[in-house]
Length: 90
Image (cartoon, rainbow, N blue to C red; front, side):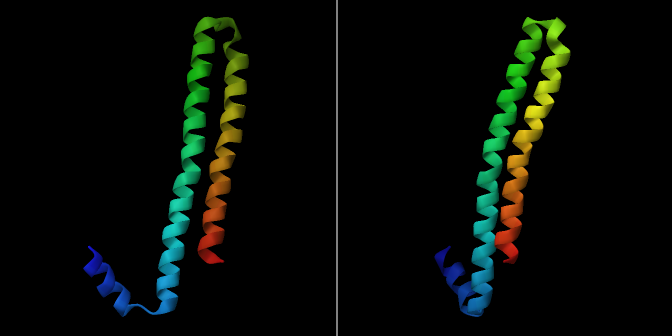
């Protein structure tokens, strides 16, 4: 595997190597940024379903609060995507 990487690196200019490293690190950063919101949304929906099962009469209020929480948590993933774009094209 290392020999292949050396062959590829031998044919690339330093600017191309820098662009490839930036793309790889930006993709890695976005992957890490998506883990937190994914866990947060899963936890939020699970607790909301549990709350609706315990008190069905409050399901409307719980559902509204759940969707607000999902929106705020998803905003974190969007911020991570914006940082990815900024790292890639800066």
